[in-house]
Amino acid sequence: MRRLVAILAFFASLAAYAAERPSLIVVISVDQQRFDYVDRFAPWFTTRGFARFTRNGAVFTNARYRHAVTFTGPGHAAIGSGRLPTENGIIGNTWFERDAPIDPRKWEWYFDDTTPWRPPTIRLTPFTYEGDWWWKNGGSPRYCVYDAHVKPTAGATDGMSPASLSEDGFGDRVKNRYPTARVMSVALKDRAAILMGGRRADAAYWFDWKLPAFISSTYYHYDPAVFSFNASIPGYLPASQEWRLLPSIPPAELERATFDPPAAWPLKNTRYGGTFPHPAKDIRAFTYTPFAHQMLLDFALHVLTTEQLGTHADAPDVLFVGVSSTDYLGHYYGPDSMEVADSMVRLDRALADFLDALERRFGDRVVVALTADHGVQSTPEIVKLRDPNADVGRTDLRNADPKARVLGDLPPARVAIERAVAQKLGIRIDEQTPLTDAFVYFFEEPSLYLNWRRIDALGLDHDRVKRIVRDAVRAMSDIGIADAWTSTDLLEPRANATQAEQFMRASYRSDRSGDVLMALRPGWIWTWGVNSTTHGQPVENDLHVPLLLWGAGIKPGRYDGDASPIDLAPTLGALVGVQAGGRAAHVLPCVEPPSVP
Ligand SMILES: [Zn+2]
Image 1: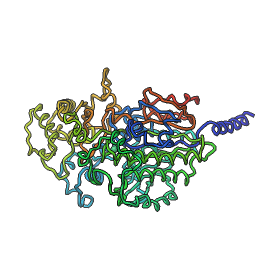
Image 2 (image 1 turned 180 degrees about the vertical axis):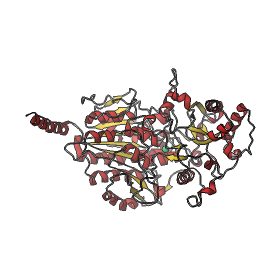
Image 3 (image 1 turned 90 degrees about the vertical axis):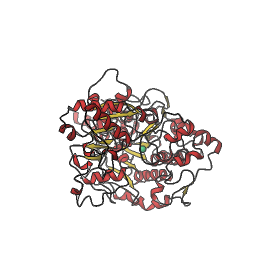
Image 4 (image 1 turned 60 degrees about the vertical axis):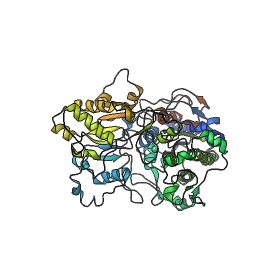
């Protein structure tokens, strides 16, 4: 009898599930979409795209990240896991692993990504590099989703997986509670798809523009059937082979909502031209246009249909969608450009079709959340067009070229750090001092990794050297440094810590972060690419993003309280009876508080 009751209760719970809970949860991340875009470009939006959220859904006007290093990897890992980088392990897009063996393949990737230089025969004759500065200290740079143990399903890129992700994500928690639930993730960027999907995602798919094709890796139980989509990719290139400004945006209104005078055009990244029309002849150029938004959302629907997501009676399915081209073109043209305006308006239309399709298929059984992995700052040179005295600029602490030999080969600010530290320690250096004797061995935003081999050879106290480097950097306000901390500072909780310090602590991991970490003043950015802008700081424009929910179980309204994209995990969890998210995440007030034990 007791067993019968248990069985009846079990079926009753399924029926209850079927009645009240969403069968499909969709989380959309629009890479680099700053909070203000939703309002700024609203006059030209349809009623079915972003307006579906702003008119019929929940709008959080004060959604900010709670970590300092506002890059794509950390942002997507935070969205997917509801955890801070210090908890989920994804502290940056790249970090330095000093205890790892020197892996020429990782260094090759690093230099390829940061300089035009290509190590010609690195895999065949690695010892050729024995004398190079980067070969001397051991360790390797590590890309946040790099995984040597898996292979891509096609193409020549490295294997990618969530191996670096430390803890359960939202999708993992859903799969724990509902063994038949399926979790899938799609994006142009590998790190966006993989880090949102979590550790137990059934599949993550991303885009290899060289093929061009959506691919996955042997980490996943990917379904080769979804790759039938790849045949349609060339059809997304515009027939005109150009990206032209939408004629439906009235020029006078556009001028009011942007700052893009002809004098700004040469200050943008001019690889595809500084203004409309931009060439879109090949797939690489296409990924820097909003036509790629349409392709990505169509691929998301293709995966949804092929895998019949959201059709279980006994479990919800989860689909993560990363719109990535908004970031590619945002870096090139900046948040004040006509390009970003046009991109958002076109995204709104593609989003409208995507949401229409979800509503047609799932009615009130679907819930959709939309946010971004970070915002962005204006291109400093374009800000200066408006105000020549603005406190903005680029901070260049980049590493030397792989074949560089002496301190003089470093950017001037890195030489200045070396000089300040040497002077404090009473050690003589000059521009001809070998690079292998530099105090700072490696820079990866926002960390300086010190040269412990050299510091030990000099018999110096580690913490003293860290403090000296920190103080030297702090004094360099002329290059935009707002503050700096040693790793020891960040390990010790301190009363009265500034928000920047608290956020930097949330971005710190002793096994991955460097020895001295820095934050820049608002308006200052790490040098990145040529004439491009970027993000990555604990400042308003990088932290503040949209946070919108619409659909099953969501109480519509405008919510002005403190919120964060990391709150999505516990909030969506509350809708399906799953506990998710870390210590800094809270259930948002647009859902009923969780009632499940
Ligand atoms: Zn970016």
